[in-house]
Amino acid sequence: MEERNEAAAAQSEADLQGGTEPAERTGNTDPAAQAVQEMQEVQEVQEVQAVQTVQEDSAGREAPAPAGPVIRAKYNKRELAFTGEEAAPLVQKGLKFEAIEPDYRRLKRLALAEGVGVSELLDRLLRESDEAAYRRALEDCGGNARAAEKLAAFQRREQEERAGGREADTAEREFREVDAAFPGRFAGAEELPVPVVELAARRGLPLLDAVLRFDHEQKRQAEAARVRQEAAAKASAGSMTGETARADLDAEAFSAAFAAALH
Image (cartoon, rainbow, N blue to C red):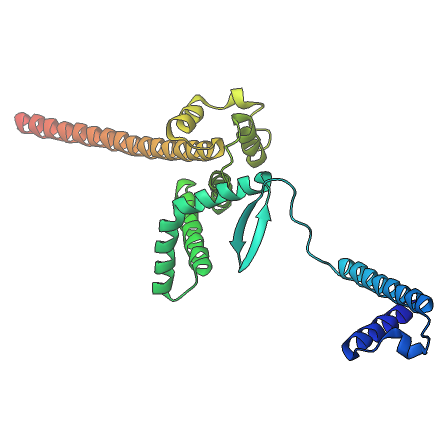
């Protein structure tokens, strides 16, 4: 059917271009027959055009423009149409970019000075920041590498959440982080030491961070107390030894004086 329609359309186009009347092809000069034949040919051409239209639609023609009021914008050398609902979040993103565009331009200039792309520069800065954060966490945890890794990872997740515009979770979620790091140590958030809660609130630290800092300070104080006790014990022992020696000297002097008196 499609081949016959295409052939009829091609023949009709050739007839129009060559100025040949359909009656001249068939040799039929009857006006009625000629009219019928012309109508058949017109119908065949219309059928071919309809088939071509369906094929074009199935091949992926552009969707019709949205109904109702639209907002048109050019992007990537194309004009796009958006409904008000579709355009609202795009406008919001555009306003946000407008606010940070000066910073982005400075960042791009810095990347050009370093001879790298913006993405590569950001990756390097983030990597250096993570390494510095781990060194600080290692110091806060008294050299405990495992605890430092947990602390640094927790801080990184917190930063990512805040950078993404998400509010920090409640103390309940933070307590779950503490419980995962120290299973069974605290039955609930109410059992957390008061200094931990105060430190977290005063300095805006996550609970896990505050617990690790608290533990480190407790160990430091315990070690300092042990050193003081040892020093005091040594000093006390030295004092007693000195008193014994002085008593011996006094006894010797008394004996010498007593012996001299006897002579």
